[in-house]
Image 1 (tube, rainbow, N blue to C red):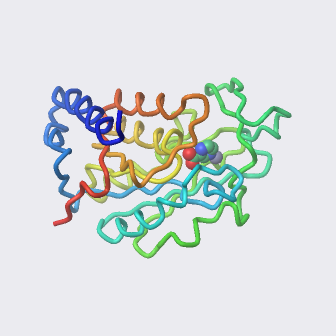
Image 2 (image 1 turned 45 degrees about the vertical axis):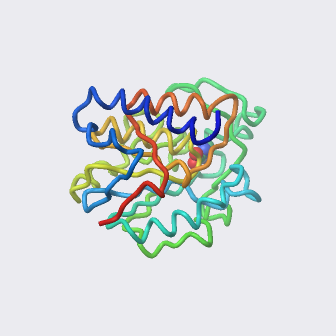
Length: 242
Ligand code: VGL
Ligand code: ZN
């Protein structure tokens, strides 16, 4: 399937799922245009040196999202950016356990991928990408700083219990829908999107403003999880600003 027809297919599947849930019904026409307004937030996930080629956990073509996100950020009234922020010796690091990077272990809070050391607090690797324009960021939220629990999502640690406070922040500001983008589609973008649904937000992942790692089929699995949770997907060019 071509990229376009694959996308149409996925969006059509999303529309069927959405038709059962009334808050999303208005997005059935997402293929045409999505109007962005004051109750929408842009959530920019982990656009950091570590996830850009040259970093410690590079996402292929990760740098390509930067100009797209810079253009979008100026058009939203609420922009939140996240920063993966691990202490040295973090529980998610393969080196902490003497394991091979990208292998899997069981933790009390569930399965944990063993990552290369990445985004260590206060290193250059953990810095937001130098070309990412932070001017319009209302909030820069750090996550993954608990030495014993990983934190993929902008809303909850991987124990699924410890909240970051982001849902309350967004609700206090009247946000009803979040547009999620950044790195990586199949991990932090995916978990943030699914958790945003759980906390009652409408969620649209911006496909062209995100890139994935794709370890052991994680891209396909990630999109399935998101579809199941009622997450919609769109291209940044589908957005219309009023
Ligand atoms: C991420 C793996 C480990 C991400 C963070 O930002 O998607 N992935 N830590
Ligand atoms: Zn991490």
